[in-house]
Image (cartoon, rainbow, N blue to C red; front, side):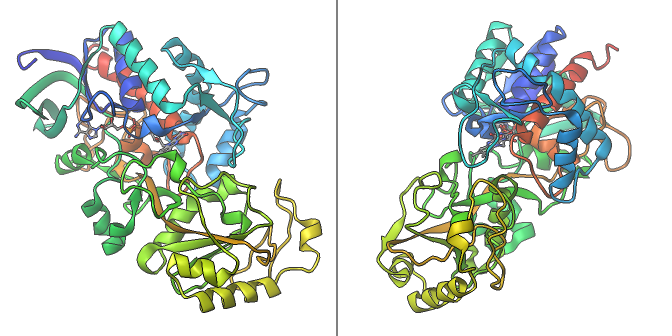
Length: 465
Ligand SMILES: Cc1cc2nc3c(=O)[nH]c(=O)nc-3n(C[C@H](O)[C@H](O)[C@H](O)COP(=O)(O)OP(=O)(O)OC[C@H]3O[C@@H](n4cnc5c(N)ncnc54)[C@H](O)[C@@H]3O)c2cc1C
């Protein structure tokens, strides 16, 4: 291993890495994948995924209708402050059209849309068995096509001569190895599991964040690239985050810890105050702002409350909920002031329209609002029917946006303006080129697949073209 000079070495073991590796192999390259995790937990954040968002026509078995390029583009422009680099974002949208066929040709299998609170059956294509099954298929295909995979191989350092990466230092159980290649693809994800790095931008608040994916995404490779002169892309405070059950594990809780009760009730902070419109828009467009909403609250904790009228209308919370005959009883169990919680919710109930129960329609924006402070713009029912329910919430960080700047060839750019000769990037480590502040469900896998194909192909051809 030490003496060999590979055509392409890919760092990472998730979707972007496997797509890069298979694309490089399709070009005839000898490819080595370095995955920090062991075989069982291989696949990074990608193993937690369920679906991908791509342009497609009508008549597919896997979607309930067509999704035109213009519509996907419009959707991307309407999240957060829109795409950070419109040219690279448009390239991503256009290239997404050929992604599902490419995936199938490399071992992926899809399934009919799943029902759920995010209503993604038309726009998103679901993986049969989820992301873990997708990654297992990709690893099988990769190994069958002659790609070498080294597990428990943690890249610690990158060695450069000028603008050329010449070697990697890799930490393994049996000691350090030096790995050489003609080209490198960096697909090692974001830095969301590096709490000290998050603290630089968020202070001690970051100590209260729960990380939805694995500990392995600590940004070691991203930091090494930046230290070697790579230019950055994306907001340093930017991340995708959702409300998760505060009882979830610190790392790797995955998809099941997300809490979807928010539009059906109210959310209080630890001063028993409401702080954000729980019914601002349909849940698929708002679920991803609630992690940040909670991150901005004292002690980064919040509490969802609802009552028996709406119980059962959303996915059941993973660890169950607290319940009591009174709101104060629920609040006591959650550890906040019961009298204050009761007063806030009683005041909220007074702002709800008298005919709310007749007009409410959870299937769409119903305009059934409460003129409270802050307002609740839709689905505002009084919370007045025992038993009452509650759950503690924390920010659940999915992935970070700050990454390395790339060009349309996925080549990593340097802050001094000269690109690296042989360093390419795909996936979360460069998602800041596409995403600014917002996110669309399913687009992380689109970015990883589109840019993995480009990075793998370009890395294989580098110096040959
Ligand atoms: C719970 C959850 C659900 C999600 N659901 C969806 C969904 O349904 N659809 C969607 O599009 N997106 C979803 N996402 C986001 C999605 O997971 C990411 O956008 C995508 O997986 C990123 O792929 P990636 O290959 O860039 O990173 P990852 O899949 O995170 O892979 C990074 C890899 O790099 C390895 N690595 C890290 N550091 C090193 C190192 N120093 N040396 C060697 N290897 C290293 C890690 O072990 C890992 O294998 C979800 C995320 C989470 C957490």
